[in-house]
Length: 369
Image 1 (cartoon, helix red, strand yellow):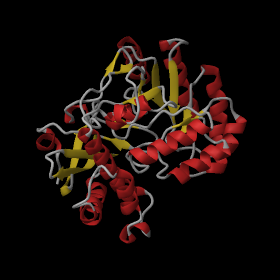
Image 2 (cartoon, one colour; image 1 turned 60 degrees about the vertical axis):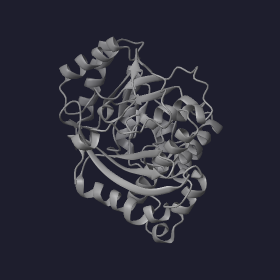
Image 3 (cartoon, rainbow, N blue to C red; image 1 turned 60 degrees about the horizontal axis):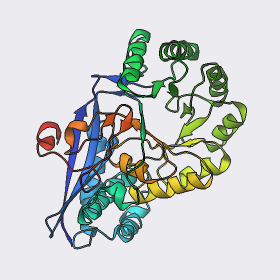
Image 4 (tube, helix red, strand yellow; image 1 turned 45 degrees about the vertical axis):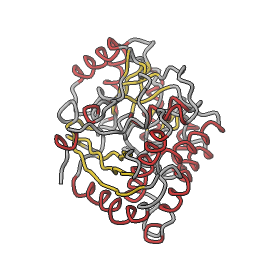
């Protein structure tokens, strides 16, 4: 089997709640920038990365895929994923300007498409190709319900609705200008859902070490399951210091674009729940390496769903460090087999591939230039 052509796409899909905000961003659409790999066998592979739907930056990712990586793939066997990843990662035109951000997101989209093809060629879903046995129950926690721009009343109503749907965990965004306001919202949701529901919070890198320390100690009163991205994403030392100062566990990983970057936090003791994102860290292979690293330190992995769960569900079902996955449904209308929860657990994908195959009308509905 050989790759004969690479096509690209940019989809902007409206978020389910019209406009949402965390401590650093306002988002109206989720972006999916991706690659479609055509082969001489008739099989087609799909892969994408996830963005906040800003067209100018999405075009940079797309152009990196089509202009730099595509010529290196035509004529190659897509099943040779590891060698092709190294070929693209170490390409002279990329190596000295990349290793994070745009180039790594472009590489992630392509690598996911390669794994989609490899699983389709084997006629099995990716979780099975990766060694999963199909007997695992993967718990989902709801992220699409705790936005910082929402009123307290809306937070409470959405948290209760999530529990009624079967979710056993919900996440709130914090990181406002007045941290005590965040704590009031956390307290209200904890009271609404009761003590048995996991309650996570996410500051999206907003605070400095003194503020994060104060907030982290306050969170202990509400049995918060984890404190996600409390400080600047690359600050290993401050996260390690915070971990020594508070009882609430720290979660991070979505902003680490390489195994080396994530390893620094793990080795320093600055993270307790490891959250690699396959659409940023380089794809399926690097995600597995990150999960293996976490497992070696006896740390749980809860993948960040920049892909809106499609690939993540396969990885989490196959890897022993994973028992839970972030649930965000924004891209579900785009896929032939959308990621789905049933009573708070992910439904086992059945179709061959990585669940990234686009519906025939997805580009027509959501594509942007």
